Length: 246
Length: 254
Image (cartoon, rainbow over all chains, first blue to last red; front, side, top):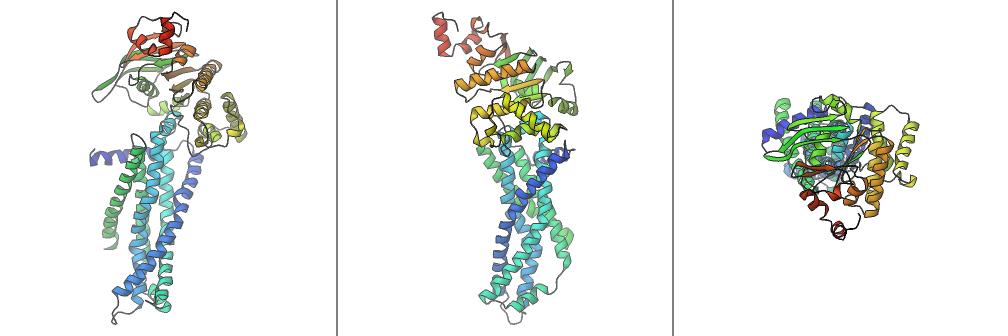
């Protein structure tokens, strides 16, 4: 099926998703569940990845900037800005597209192939809205928090690894992360994480909602969802960087 | 009562239902029988509005389901209960949560009233209180079907649809499910439509039977008539069951 067909069907799904809920209380209950399921349960992996990447970046920057002409605080500065601008928003979104995205596709896809979605429709429930809207709101809501957590623990990772490996001293690193700080980088990345949050929830939901067949097809849909979400994240990263940063 | 008039449905060039007209009566257990791929499930899904039809009319009592808008259809769906082949219970919630779901979504009942209704529905399908907190993955196939029936009747529907409610069940449990559906139909005066392959269901509860062959209405009658029909296709279908064929050959009453 063509690219335009998927675009058209994606937007018609969004129209259904944004319809008026049957009962707000039920949607709110579902939203709280999704914030925990998709958001809070991702905090652990975000912390682990960020600490390691922060540490690795500090070591790599110390090698790349191994020149007596460069001030050593540059290592901390480079680590901070890389985390602020790209890693904690874009790279993390790519990683979470795998975790959260495949979770969403397989959950909704399994509901489709086991007729649970038909069951909701027959009851008179707008299944697209009931199943997808709370997920989109939950992920868009939680992504900026995950971004902030990631930046914090990434910097902490560098702070632990740098002095431990002897690549940079603690005062130099602390000096680096406080030098030439641009607050707009945070605003820019939070805007990006809101957009990426929407993509990470809505694109996999689309692939799950329209899956046909059995368990094998749900697996294929999950893979397709993750691949397409990743491509879209990179595409929107390019557009947003061009629009907001240059 | 549900009346279907001159229904046609095709998928691409494949014509699945051809000029089907039938009346499913209120307070009766109406069965749809036929070979696999004959169009039974498509007929049920068209009647429920899950598939858009090519032409024809579907009437729920005095309401033309085919000419009303989506909003009206949505309202009407609260009067419809459906039991799917696999039960289609929501995995993430418990047995009682599944039955409470339509009540939470569509009623303004208090928590106590809802609990009372949940217990009423589950006790009607003989589900023990110990199973209320279990998740669907922790109960047997027969129990899943019974919970699905309880969920389908939670909102007191006027119309009940069942897609192969006995598939995958042992003969004893199948008889229990059949009897349950028959009793509920009488007790709540519903229009019940059951899509089945099960010959025991046909003989035991088939007050009105529609036989579909290659997408067309081939025969219609009752369980009293189904074994003595002259319809060649129907006889091929019914007496493909060796036990029935043997009993017929030996002139025994079935």
